[in-house]
Image (tube, rainbow, N blue to C red; front, side):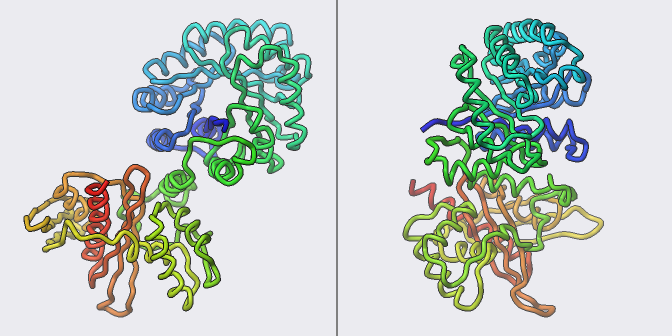
Amino acid sequence: MKKIEIADITIRECTEKPEFSLSFKEKVEVAKQLDKRGISVIELPCVADNKTDSLVVKTLAPVIKGSVLSVNAGLKKSDVDKAWEALGSASQARIHINVPVSSVQMEFICGMKPTKLLEAVKEVVAYAKSLCPQVEVSAQDATRAEMDFLVQVCDAAIEAGATHLDICDTAGVMFPEEFRKLISELKEKVSSMDKVKISVTCSDELNMANANAFAVADMVDQIKTTMMGSSAPSLETAVHTFAMRGDSLGVSCSVSQAELARTLRQLSWLSGDKKSVKSPFSDTTGAEKHEEIELDADADISEVIRAIKELGYELSDDDNAKVYKEFKRVSEKKRVGSKELDAIIATTALQVPPTYQLVDFVINSGNIITSTAQVTLDKEGTLMKGLSSGDGPIEAALLAIEMVIGHHYELDDFRIQSVTEGSEAVGSALVKLNVNGKVFSGSGISTDIIGASIRAYINALNKIVYEEKNV
């Protein structure tokens, strides 16, 4: 099966479009998450005149290991020099040169005639290739260009050393069948097309970006996506399509749909309404996520297993059967959404003998002091104490547990809700920990939310420890 590379343009787009702006720290975090989830290429903006963007590239270059870092450059050698200077320490680097190929863009963007543009392409691509092993040339507005000239630009770029050739429907004017015909015609007319990897950039002007990308997926090597905005295919939709229908096209990608879904939830502040969140432990509202998951009593086991996987769990056949049995009981009384299914999994799946048990905890917290927590755990007969401070009593308590176990686990989700009413209400906590892409959930109940949170964390921790012992 052919493996398609995904090049994500989120960071570049957020720099070019103010309405989607990200801070320096946010750009770095997004890039790290994309790299972690196996995105092939992370596209970054031009650094020619922007010191901040240059700093972003220089910051990411030594820390991004799996993804290719691609930096935009213009048609001047000086722009290529600045891109390469910023990219120098990257494990995998690519210089990305944008070439306007329609008569409209040639006139208004670079002010060149076709002959002059061809000379510039040959010169700048050859120069970029002398510095960087990967050079991508994007034929901007290719769907409105004269075919003969577009072929000349492609031939010139390949002859000069381009490794990737990107065909852009910048204006978003084509239907899927028209775009497929264009790519097919180019592959026939560009004699050396087999020497490069073919990429496509599809605009969503007509809400057809995803359709156009998959109309040619079997003919190309790379498609471009974004996590936000509407200028390119949605990353989430593209990965979902690969997972659901890629086999019918004979194509796949290296990104796990379940892992990407978790990452997108973690980066939900990109939508703009959650940028005030400062800590992974501050989301204590128990607000519903995965609102798209809703199952009734008629759902069969295959539907429930599919929903389990959408939540990020990988359960054994035995645990799937246990969850389904409990689901049937609960669904007789109410419809089951993501929150209910999470709770069912936490209480019925992966139940193991406890390695750690809570002995006691002491919390000091107030509005004029930093919260601290001391937690004592019993590990198979040995008492172990942890002491930590944190941004609030719950974070302090969970960090104290990490001090006891000597390990940090990625917090995938954390929820607290009341299960009874009144001043002495009982609280329920759900904790989901992520270990190498696999989710372990734990639940806890107590008359105080801190105790419930500690018990839920320990419940999830015991499942991780048990699996590690029995691998």
